[in-house]
Image (cartoon, rainbow, N blue to C red; front, side, top):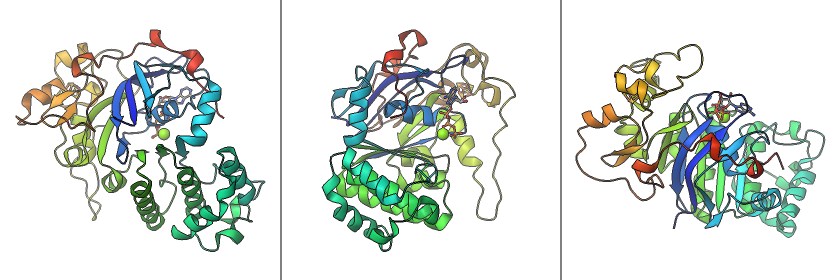
Amino acid sequence: MSLLVVDGLTVVYPGAGRPAVAGVSFEIEAGRTLAVVGESGSGKTTLALALAGLLDRRARRGARRLEVNGEDLLSAGRKRWRQLRRTDISFVFQSPVNSWNPTRTMKAQVKDGMAASGRAGRMPELYDLLGRVGFEDPERRLEDLPHQLSGGMLQRVSIAVAVIREPALLIADEPTSALDSTVQSEILAILGELRREVNLAMLVISHDLSVVSRVADDVMVMYGGKAVELGSRRNALHSAVHPYTKGLLDSVPSLDGERKTLLPSMAPGPLPAAGCPFAPRCGLAVDECRRTEPDLAPVGATLAACPPAAAASTYTSGSPSASTRSSTPASSTSEGSPGCSDAAGAEGPP
Ligand SMILES: Nc1ncnc2c1ncn2[C@@H]1O[C@H](COP(=O)(O)OP(=O)(O)OP(=O)(O)O)[C@@H](O)[C@H]1O
Ligand code: SF4
Ligand SMILES: [Mg+2]
Protein backbone atom coordinates (compact mmCIF):
# COMPACT_ATOMS: atom_id res chain seq x y z
CA MET A 1 0.00 0.00 0.00
CA SER A 2 1.31 3.45 -0.85
CA LEU A 3 2.08 5.68 2.10
CA LEU A 4 0.84 8.80 0.35
CA VAL A 5 -2.00 8.73 -2.17
CA VAL A 6 -2.87 11.93 -4.02
CA ASP A 7 -5.64 11.72 -6.59
CA GLY A 8 -6.92 14.66 -8.60
CA LEU A 9 -5.61 17.34 -6.21
CA THR A 10 -6.62 20.84 -7.26
CA VAL A 11 -5.91 24.12 -5.48
CA VAL A 12 -7.35 27.44 -6.56
CA TYR A 13 -6.31 30.78 -5.06
CA PRO A 14 -8.96 33.51 -5.02
CA GLY A 15 -8.99 35.63 -8.14
CA ALA A 16 -6.60 33.35 -10.03
CA GLY A 17 -7.50 32.45 -13.62
CA ARG A 18 -6.06 28.93 -13.46
CA PRO A 19 -5.68 26.51 -10.55
CA ALA A 20 -2.23 26.71 -8.94
CA VAL A 21 -2.38 22.90 -8.74
CA ALA A 22 -4.56 21.30 -11.40
CA GLY A 23 -5.73 17.73 -10.91
CA VAL A 24 -2.39 16.24 -9.80
CA SER A 25 -2.26 12.50 -9.01
CA PHE A 26 0.62 10.40 -7.70
CA GLU A 27 1.58 7.96 -4.95
CA ILE A 28 4.69 7.52 -2.80
CA GLU A 29 5.62 4.27 -1.07
CA ALA A 30 7.41 4.14 2.29
CA GLY A 31 11.16 4.43 1.86
CA ARG A 32 10.94 6.14 -1.52
CA THR A 33 11.59 9.71 -2.57
CA LEU A 34 9.58 11.60 -5.17
CA ALA A 35 11.24 14.77 -6.45
CA VAL A 36 8.93 17.46 -7.78
CA VAL A 37 10.57 19.72 -10.30
CA GLY A 38 9.32 22.67 -12.34
CA GLU A 39 9.94 26.33 -12.90
CA SER A 40 8.90 29.16 -10.65
CA GLY A 41 5.14 29.41 -10.29
CA SER A 42 4.44 25.87 -11.49
CA GLY A 43 2.66 25.02 -8.23
CA LYS A 44 5.31 23.01 -6.33
CA THR A 45 5.02 24.82 -3.02
CA THR A 46 1.23 24.95 -3.25
CA LEU A 47 1.21 21.17 -3.71
CA ALA A 48 3.49 20.69 -0.69
CA LEU A 49 1.42 23.01 1.50
CA ALA A 50 -1.77 21.17 0.52
CA LEU A 51 -0.20 17.87 1.58
CA ALA A 52 0.68 19.32 4.98
CA GLY A 53 -2.62 21.11 5.61
CA LEU A 54 -0.83 24.45 5.48
CA LEU A 55 -2.62 26.15 2.60
CA ASP A 56 -3.65 29.76 2.81
CA ARG A 57 -7.15 29.75 4.35
CA ARG A 58 -8.60 31.43 1.28
CA ALA A 59 -7.34 28.73 -1.06
CA ARG A 60 -9.91 26.19 -2.24
CA ARG A 61 -8.76 22.61 -2.30
CA GLY A 62 -10.41 19.67 -4.02
CA ALA A 63 -9.37 16.07 -4.60
CA ARG A 64 -10.80 12.64 -5.20
CA ARG A 65 -8.43 11.09 -2.64
CA LEU A 66 -5.79 12.40 -0.26
CA GLU A 67 -4.45 9.76 2.12
CA VAL A 68 -1.43 9.33 4.37
CA ASN A 69 -0.87 5.92 5.94
CA GLY A 70 -4.36 4.89 4.85
CA GLU A 71 -6.02 7.83 6.63
CA ASP A 72 -8.40 9.97 4.60
CA LEU A 73 -7.20 13.56 4.96
CA LEU A 74 -9.96 15.16 2.95
CA SER A 75 -12.18 15.15 6.00
CA ALA A 76 -9.44 16.14 8.49
CA GLY A 77 -10.19 19.32 10.45
CA ARG A 78 -7.66 21.87 11.71
CA LYS A 79 -7.04 19.98 14.96
CA ARG A 80 -6.29 16.71 13.16
CA TRP A 81 -3.96 18.47 10.69
CA ARG A 82 -2.05 19.96 13.63
CA GLN A 83 -1.68 16.52 15.19
CA LEU A 84 -0.56 15.03 11.89
CA ARG A 85 2.14 17.69 11.52
CA ARG A 86 3.44 16.74 14.97
CA THR A 87 3.47 13.03 14.30
CA ASP A 88 3.07 11.76 10.74
CA ILE A 89 4.05 14.62 8.44
CA SER A 90 7.20 16.74 8.83
CA PHE A 91 7.98 19.79 6.72
CA VAL A 92 11.41 21.30 6.01
CA PHE A 93 11.13 24.79 4.57
CA GLN A 94 13.34 26.44 1.98
CA SER A 95 14.84 29.15 4.12
CA PRO A 96 16.51 27.89 7.30
CA VAL A 97 16.78 31.47 8.58
CA ASN A 98 13.08 32.26 8.25
CA SER A 99 12.06 28.94 9.79
CA TRP A 100 13.19 30.02 13.27
CA ASN A 101 12.06 32.81 15.60
CA PRO A 102 15.03 35.25 15.74
CA THR A 103 14.31 36.31 19.32
CA ARG A 104 14.46 32.91 21.06
CA THR A 105 17.36 30.53 21.53
CA MET A 106 17.46 27.50 19.31
CA LYS A 107 17.24 25.23 22.32
CA ALA A 108 14.00 26.84 23.56
CA GLN A 109 12.44 26.47 20.13
CA VAL A 110 13.66 22.94 19.58
CA LYS A 111 12.39 21.90 23.02
CA ASP A 112 8.97 23.37 22.28
CA GLY A 113 8.82 21.49 18.99
CA MET A 114 9.87 18.22 20.64
CA ALA A 115 7.35 18.65 23.45
CA ALA A 116 4.55 19.42 20.98
CA SER A 117 5.19 16.12 19.24
CA GLY A 118 5.33 14.18 22.52
CA ARG A 119 9.10 13.72 22.37
CA ALA A 120 10.26 16.05 25.12
CA GLY A 121 12.34 13.26 26.67
CA ARG A 122 14.31 12.64 23.51
CA MET A 123 16.63 15.66 23.58
CA PRO A 124 19.71 13.41 24.17
CA GLU A 125 18.81 11.48 21.00
CA LEU A 126 18.46 14.75 19.12
CA TYR A 127 21.94 15.82 20.27
CA ASP A 128 23.29 12.47 19.06
CA LEU A 129 21.57 12.88 15.72
CA LEU A 130 22.87 16.43 15.34
CA GLY A 131 26.38 15.21 16.10
CA ARG A 132 26.02 12.57 13.41
CA VAL A 133 24.97 15.13 10.81
CA GLY A 134 28.06 17.24 11.44
CA PHE A 135 26.67 19.74 13.96
CA GLU A 136 29.46 20.19 16.45
CA ASP A 137 28.83 20.53 20.18
CA PRO A 138 25.03 20.66 19.76
CA GLU A 139 24.17 21.05 23.43
CA ARG A 140 26.17 24.26 23.68
CA ARG A 141 25.49 25.67 20.22
CA LEU A 142 21.73 25.31 20.61
CA GLU A 143 21.97 27.95 23.37
CA ASP A 144 22.62 30.43 20.53
CA LEU A 145 20.09 32.60 18.77
CA PRO A 146 19.32 31.60 15.15
CA HIS A 147 21.40 34.43 13.64
CA GLN A 148 24.49 33.10 15.45
CA LEU A 149 24.34 29.87 13.42
CA SER A 150 25.10 29.46 9.72
CA GLY A 151 22.39 28.54 7.21
CA GLY A 152 23.82 25.03 6.94
CA MET A 153 23.70 24.56 10.72
CA LEU A 154 20.14 25.84 10.93
CA GLN A 155 19.02 23.51 8.16
CA ARG A 156 20.74 20.58 9.91
CA VAL A 157 18.67 21.37 13.02
CA SER A 158 15.47 21.65 10.95
CA ILE A 159 16.11 18.26 9.36
CA ALA A 160 17.11 16.58 12.62
CA VAL A 161 13.99 17.87 14.39
CA ALA A 162 11.85 16.78 11.43
CA VAL A 163 13.32 13.27 11.39
CA ILE A 164 13.50 12.60 15.15
CA ARG A 165 9.71 12.74 15.18
CA GLU A 166 9.81 9.60 13.02
CA PRO A 167 7.17 10.89 10.63
CA ALA A 168 5.80 8.69 7.90
CA LEU A 169 6.21 11.47 5.34
CA LEU A 170 8.83 14.20 5.11
CA ILE A 171 8.14 17.10 2.77
CA ALA A 172 11.13 19.29 1.93
CA ASP A 173 10.51 22.42 -0.14
CA GLU A 174 13.79 23.46 -1.79
CA PRO A 175 15.69 22.35 1.33
CA THR A 176 19.12 23.26 0.00
CA SER A 177 18.57 26.13 -2.41
CA ALA A 178 19.59 28.76 0.17
CA LEU A 179 22.87 26.95 0.93
CA ASP A 180 26.23 26.93 -0.82
CA SER A 181 27.08 23.88 -2.89
CA THR A 182 29.34 22.13 -0.36
CA VAL A 183 26.77 22.41 2.40
CA GLN A 184 24.06 21.46 -0.09
CA SER A 185 25.88 18.18 -0.81
CA GLU A 186 26.22 17.40 2.88
CA ILE A 187 22.55 18.12 3.56
CA LEU A 188 21.45 15.91 0.67
CA ALA A 189 23.65 13.08 1.92
CA ILE A 190 22.14 13.47 5.41
CA LEU A 191 18.60 13.37 4.03
CA GLY A 192 19.38 10.23 2.02
CA GLU A 193 20.94 8.46 4.99
CA LEU A 194 18.15 9.31 7.42
CA ARG A 195 15.53 8.38 4.87
CA ARG A 196 16.99 4.89 4.57
CA GLU A 197 17.32 4.47 8.34
CA VAL A 198 13.72 5.24 9.21
CA ASN A 199 12.08 4.14 5.94
CA LEU A 200 10.67 7.61 5.37
CA ALA A 201 8.61 8.52 2.35
CA MET A 202 9.95 11.84 1.09
CA LEU A 203 8.64 14.48 -1.25
CA VAL A 204 11.49 16.81 -2.19
CA ILE A 205 10.83 19.94 -4.21
CA SER A 206 13.60 21.41 -6.29
CA HIS A 207 14.17 23.31 -9.49
CA ASP A 208 17.77 22.06 -9.49
CA LEU A 209 18.15 18.91 -11.56
CA SER A 210 21.46 18.03 -9.91
CA VAL A 211 19.62 17.87 -6.57
CA VAL A 212 16.89 15.77 -8.16
CA SER A 213 19.40 13.35 -9.63
CA ARG A 214 20.92 12.84 -6.18
CA VAL A 215 17.84 12.31 -4.04
CA ALA A 216 15.01 11.00 -6.20
CA ASP A 217 13.72 7.52 -6.86
CA ASP A 218 10.94 9.00 -8.96
CA VAL A 219 10.41 12.40 -10.53
CA MET A 220 7.28 14.43 -11.21
CA VAL A 221 7.65 17.42 -13.52
CA MET A 222 5.11 20.23 -13.09
CA TYR A 223 4.17 22.95 -15.52
CA GLY A 224 1.36 25.46 -15.05
CA GLY A 225 0.01 23.54 -12.03
CA LYS A 226 -0.18 20.23 -13.92
CA ALA A 227 1.95 17.13 -13.66
CA VAL A 228 3.29 16.85 -17.21
CA GLU A 229 5.69 13.93 -16.69
CA LEU A 230 5.92 11.28 -13.97
CA GLY A 231 8.35 8.41 -13.95
CA SER A 232 11.46 6.89 -12.48
CA ARG A 233 14.47 9.16 -12.05
CA ARG A 234 16.24 7.27 -14.79
CA ASN A 235 13.42 7.72 -17.29
CA ALA A 236 12.71 11.33 -16.38
CA LEU A 237 16.33 12.42 -16.52
CA HIS A 238 17.61 10.21 -19.34
CA SER A 239 14.63 9.34 -21.55
CA ALA A 240 12.29 12.28 -21.00
CA VAL A 241 9.16 12.32 -23.14
CA HIS A 242 7.44 15.66 -22.53
CA PRO A 243 8.83 18.61 -24.54
CA TYR A 244 9.02 20.74 -21.38
CA THR A 245 11.06 18.12 -19.51
CA LYS A 246 13.34 17.75 -22.51
CA GLY A 247 13.77 21.51 -22.72
CA LEU A 248 14.53 21.68 -19.02
CA LEU A 249 17.21 19.02 -19.34
CA ASP A 250 18.67 20.58 -22.48
CA SER A 251 18.93 23.97 -20.85
CA VAL A 252 21.13 22.76 -17.97
CA PRO A 253 24.55 24.37 -18.46
CA SER A 254 27.51 22.02 -18.79
CA LEU A 255 30.53 22.49 -16.54
CA ASP A 256 32.07 24.93 -19.04
CA GLY A 257 28.89 27.00 -18.86
CA GLU A 258 27.66 26.03 -22.31
CA ARG A 259 23.93 25.31 -22.73
CA LYS A 260 22.88 22.87 -25.39
CA THR A 261 19.53 24.54 -26.13
CA LEU A 262 17.59 27.23 -24.32
CA LEU A 263 13.94 26.75 -23.44
CA PRO A 264 11.85 29.44 -25.15
CA SER A 265 10.98 32.11 -22.58
CA MET A 266 7.55 32.26 -21.01
CA ALA A 267 5.15 34.22 -23.14
CA PRO A 268 4.12 37.41 -21.32
CA GLY A 269 0.73 37.30 -19.59
CA PRO A 270 -1.22 34.41 -18.13
CA LEU A 271 -1.01 30.82 -19.31
CA PRO A 272 -3.60 29.90 -21.95
CA ALA A 273 -7.09 29.31 -20.55
CA ALA A 274 -7.60 26.20 -22.71
CA GLY A 275 -5.45 23.44 -24.12
CA CYS A 276 -1.92 22.48 -23.13
CA PRO A 277 -0.38 25.13 -20.85
CA PHE A 278 3.00 24.63 -22.55
CA ALA A 279 1.65 25.26 -26.07
CA PRO A 280 2.88 28.89 -26.38
CA ARG A 281 6.45 27.68 -25.85
CA CYS A 282 6.27 24.34 -27.58
CA GLY A 283 7.90 23.67 -30.93
CA LEU A 284 5.77 20.55 -31.42
CA ALA A 285 2.38 22.20 -30.79
CA VAL A 286 -0.42 21.35 -33.21
CA ASP A 287 -3.94 22.81 -33.33
CA GLU A 288 -5.34 20.09 -31.07
CA CYS A 289 -2.86 21.11 -28.34
CA ARG A 290 -4.55 24.50 -28.13
CA ARG A 291 -8.01 22.97 -27.85
CA THR A 292 -7.67 20.01 -25.45
CA GLU A 293 -5.73 19.94 -22.20
CA PRO A 294 -3.79 16.66 -22.16
CA ASP A 295 -3.63 14.42 -19.08
CA LEU A 296 -0.87 12.07 -18.03
CA ALA A 297 -0.97 8.88 -20.06
CA PRO A 298 1.46 5.94 -20.26
CA VAL A 299 4.29 6.28 -22.73
CA GLY A 300 6.38 3.13 -22.32
CA ALA A 301 7.50 2.98 -18.71
CA THR A 302 6.68 6.57 -17.89
CA LEU A 303 3.65 8.91 -17.88
CA ALA A 304 3.53 12.08 -19.94
CA ALA A 305 0.83 14.63 -20.74
CA CYS A 306 1.61 15.08 -24.41
CA PRO A 307 -0.28 13.06 -27.04
CA PRO A 308 1.96 14.20 -29.96
CA ALA A 309 5.12 13.14 -28.10
CA ALA A 310 3.47 9.85 -27.11
CA ALA A 311 2.50 9.17 -30.73
CA ALA A 312 6.03 9.90 -31.89
CA SER A 313 7.62 7.89 -29.09
CA THR A 314 9.73 4.87 -29.92
CA TYR A 315 8.73 3.23 -26.63
CA THR A 316 6.87 0.03 -27.30
CA SER A 317 6.90 -1.93 -24.07
CA GLY A 318 6.70 -1.64 -20.32
CA SER A 319 4.22 0.11 -18.10
CA PRO A 320 4.62 2.61 -15.29
CA SER A 321 5.98 1.08 -12.11
CA ALA A 322 3.76 0.93 -9.04
CA SER A 323 5.69 3.71 -7.36
CA THR A 324 5.35 6.12 -10.26
CA ARG A 325 1.86 5.16 -11.32
CA SER A 326 -0.59 7.99 -11.32
CA SER A 327 -3.15 6.92 -8.74
CA THR A 328 -5.96 6.82 -11.29
CA PRO A 329 -6.09 5.37 -14.76
CA ALA A 330 -4.95 7.88 -17.35
CA SER A 331 -8.46 8.06 -18.72
CA SER A 332 -9.77 9.38 -15.41
CA THR A 333 -7.02 11.82 -14.48
CA SER A 334 -9.17 14.70 -15.60
CA GLU A 335 -8.67 17.96 -13.80
CA GLY A 336 -10.42 18.30 -10.49
CA SER A 337 -12.68 21.27 -10.91
CA PRO A 338 -12.78 24.27 -8.62
CA GLY A 339 -16.38 23.28 -8.06
CA CYS A 340 -15.28 20.34 -5.92
CA SER A 341 -13.24 22.60 -3.67
CA ASP A 342 -13.31 22.13 0.04
CA ALA A 343 -12.84 25.48 1.65
CA ALA A 344 -13.55 24.00 5.08
CA GLY A 345 -10.72 21.53 4.65
CA ALA A 346 -8.17 24.20 3.78
CA GLU A 347 -5.92 25.13 6.65
CA GLY A 348 -4.05 28.20 7.72
CA PRO A 349 -0.62 28.07 9.29
CA PRO A 350 -0.34 26.11 12.54
N1 LIG B 1 -1.03 32.62 -1.12
C1 LIG B 1 -1.22 32.78 -2.42
N2 LIG B 1 -2.23 33.53 -2.90
C2 LIG B 1 -2.45 33.70 -4.22
N3 LIG B 1 -1.70 33.11 -5.19
C3 LIG B 1 -0.67 32.35 -4.79
C4 LIG B 1 -0.37 32.15 -3.39
N4 LIG B 1 0.71 31.33 -3.30
C5 LIG B 1 1.06 31.05 -4.59
N5 LIG B 1 0.24 31.65 -5.47
C6 LIG B 1 0.29 31.52 -6.94
O1 LIG B 1 0.15 30.15 -7.26
C7 LIG B 1 1.01 29.79 -8.32
C8 LIG B 1 1.93 28.67 -7.86
O2 LIG B 1 2.80 29.21 -6.87
P1 LIG B 1 3.81 28.29 -6.06
O3 LIG B 1 4.43 29.13 -5.00
O4 LIG B 1 3.10 27.06 -5.61
O5 LIG B 1 4.86 27.90 -7.19
P2 LIG B 1 6.32 27.26 -7.06
O6 LIG B 1 6.39 26.23 -8.13
O7 LIG B 1 6.55 26.79 -5.66
O8 LIG B 1 7.27 28.47 -7.42
P3 LIG B 1 8.78 28.79 -6.88
O9 LIG B 1 9.68 27.86 -7.63
O10 LIG B 1 8.97 30.22 -7.27
O11 LIG B 1 8.80 28.57 -5.41
C9 LIG B 1 1.73 31.06 -8.73
O12 LIG B 1 1.04 31.64 -9.81
C10 LIG B 1 1.64 31.93 -7.51
O13 LIG B 1 1.65 33.30 -7.85
S1 SF4 C 1 0.55 18.61 -25.83
FE1 SF4 C 1 1.19 19.79 -27.64
S2 SF4 C 1 1.76 21.83 -26.87
FE2 SF4 C 1 1.67 20.44 -25.11
S3 SF4 C 1 3.75 19.75 -24.86
FE3 SF4 C 1 2.74 18.23 -26.15
S4 SF4 C 1 3.12 18.90 -28.27
FE4 SF4 C 1 3.62 20.60 -26.93
MG1 LIG D 1 8.00 27.27 -4.23
